Length: 359
Image: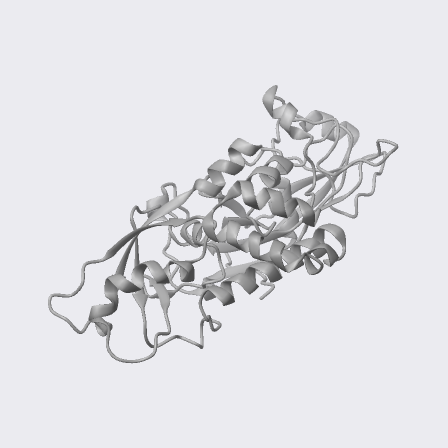
C-alpha cells in the first residue's frame, strides 16, 4: 500500500502558465512560467511561486488571482490533479493554463483568500469524510492545534511520512484492506467484501467518501483526442455521495459496482433466478451485488445492467484509468486523497444528456 500511496503523493503535473494578455503592461510580454504542480495540491498554493515571475508586467491594483483553462475558470478547491484528469481528457503536457491577477469571476468561483482559504476548505472536507466514515467528526474537531498545523504542513509540503504520523490520530480507517493479499496472488475475488468484519467474522457495511465528477456525451468516440471539450461547469455534475458497501460472501465489490451505485439514475437492476443466473454466468462480466439495502433473497440474484442509453466511456482516478473490475477497496486504500475523499472522474455516453447533481 505504501508504494502506491507514495506514487500518489509524488505525482505532479508540468504546468506552463501564461499571464492573460489583458494584464500585460510590458513589451515584450513575459515568458510563461514553468512549474511542477503536485497532484494532491491546489492551484492557489502556486501563487507565491509564480507571482514574482509576472510581477513586473502587472497593471496597478489589488491582486485577485485565479486560473483558467481554455476560457474556463478553474475551481480552486478541487485538487490540481483532479482538474487535470477532468478537463484534459486527452492529457496535454505541459498543461497550458492562464493566470489572472485582476477581474475575479465571483459569479463562477467562490472567493479565495490564498492559503488560508485552501487550508480551511481541506479541513472542512476532512470533517465531512470523518462524518461519512465514523458517523461523527469528533476526532477531527478535537485534534490539537499543533497537530492540525502539522497535518496541513504535511499536505502543503507533500510530506507523506509526516502526514501518516498525524493522520493516524484521526482514526479514519477506510473500508477494507483485505484485498491486498488477493491482489498479490492475482485473485480478484475475496472471501469477504470491502466492509470490515466484526468479532464474529460477519461482514459489516462500509461507507467510503467519494466525490464524483461526471460529464455526459451524446457523440461516441474511440480515441480520447476526439472527446468533446468541456467548456462550461454546467456540463459537469458534481456528485458528493458515499459509496455504501454491503458484504456478500464470495463476491468482490468492484470499481464498476461503485460507479453504478453512485449513479442509480442511469443503471437499472434486473432480478434473475439462480437457474437463469447460472446460465448467464461468464457471459456478463459486469454482474454486481444488490444495492437494494443489502437484502439477501435466497431465490434471487440481483444483477446490474446498464440502462438502454448509458455507457461508461471513461473512469479516471489519480491520472490512471483502472480496469473497472478492480476491487474497489484497493482503489480506496491506495488512491484516496489526503482529505480522505476518493475523487473519481467519469464520462458517460448516452443519448439524452441529463445527469442529476448534488450541487
